[in-house]
Length: 374
Ligand SMILES: [Zn+2]
Ligand SMILES: [Zn+2]
Image 1 (cartoon, rainbow, N blue to C red):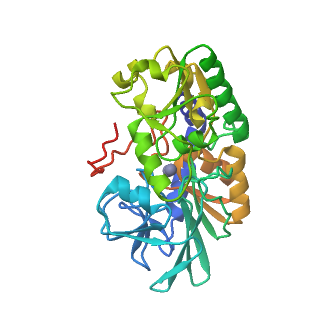
Image 2 (image 1 turned 60 degrees about the vertical axis):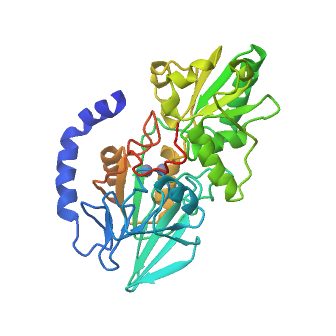
């Protein structure tokens, strides 16, 4: 992205200095360490969101870059488990309720709401009076499906920085939902199909939940509808949807809305929807040109991650004296925190963040073949 590149140029010299100091400040006594396999707690022998196969994995949430196939055992919240199992197939999964703690070799682990997607958690790790929190991905606005974010006080806070630049400044979600419904209403009046994309786990359900069903029918792409089914089976009520199938005559879509994952954009699958108006719901729509490059008529700035102001609010609320930044604008944001007088460092991980064209660049191995995500 252009903006990342130009910031990198400006920061290059300063970053060299700070990268060196980060390396020298990594302590062997750290409760959580960044290893080749993932975030590791040596005292308990467990990993958090590991990116290589391990024996014991604690999982913050079901997105593919945090919840990967191949571990011997998984532990996640009870509300995150169904979608993880759906995506990864036959895995050895145990669950824990929010706020309950589990002790492993003297280390106490507990899961707390992260507000990112259904079941998403920050994992609190406490040992001999020292507290670390690995937050996974998170957002502050309560979307009514994810369990609402709770700040957790800690000594060291591990954070993402997917949208860790001041240019990311979200408007209240209700404003965005009003914009989406207005766009749909106007398209319906003109006899157009409203085609909107949002990633299939989290964003799609959040959009769905806010749609005004009195305007027309809501049709869904299979990848979105499969996740809807999993979430409905958990007892979450979502507005009625109709799965797009070959049997539906194309004229039926006119004036109605189709909800699809970003990967469906410009696919052969979407040719049947015409005349069409394309909308994209993503935090990346805040970037100039992102919508135009994808030939969309509308970009709705809606993200399941914190923006700049909320990111800084959370860091303050944790009262952490040390912050480790894992993915997103890692280096720039670390530099900012250092300038604020915090002990901050960037850590190398294999979390990808939500990419502009999908929820993650990680492919889901062993995804449940009986329900292909097409
Ligand atoms: Zn995520
Ligand atoms: Zn992430």
